Image (cartoon, rainbow, N blue to C red):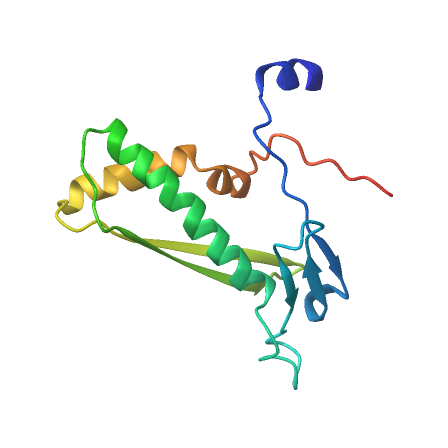
Length: 146
């Protein structure tokens, strides 16, 4: 089944990031484009040291979804100009001692009526890779011990 799936999918590129120290540590990329010291809002004294993983995810999700939103608008024959997407990502503790993410996506589509904006957002949510991953549709998450 995995071989069949891989034959259908085409990898466009792969991003790589390396973390050290968990939520209170650092993230960097081998190409040097990202080198971040994280802050942890749950840990006194370092909460404002840098961005937390949820903030980084919110930024990445809003950008990815915004691209899908623009594509969806074109597909639905709507011209969208000066749009914005705001993502709110919350870390939630569940009743089993684990954690989950809750996400809200807010879009502003100036000049587009509310019903059409909702159609565009729904279409974008169907195609955005981040939306798919959060629905459990991450096509292949492999856990590898290096």
